[in-house]
Image (cartoon, rainbow, N blue to C red):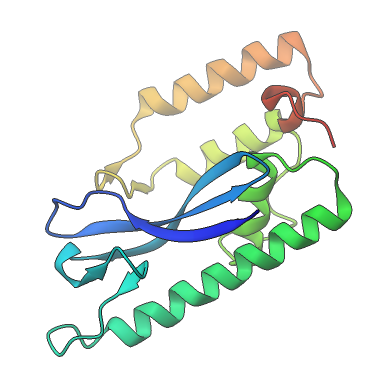
Length: 166
């Protein structure tokens, strides 16, 4: 059975990111909704913002969360029809494409070109987790991993890393 529920990353923070958790075939993916909320306006029981006068943005936020939930269901159903095995990386990538966080043509399918893509996208940009620039040392670590993978298997795919096929 599949489920798609929203949870808060940190219930004790004054403002915390909202994440959707996909569960299917004994697998689980935690995916950022790219939204945040003060936990006092969150209904843990209903997995959405409370509709209260103090938080007029609740309707808009709940609408956006429903768009994400609908996209998650559509992506999972589409992948189930195409594949016997659905890996977390594949599901995350398809969600990014569905929600237009990346374009289907921009993100490479193989791991080594994808690492180059991530380095290019993140160099000089701000890390949303800490609101600081991605560090040069982080980019060098990505490049070192890419170089090692290049030596081991130049045509490595995401499924080779996760151990999934298809």
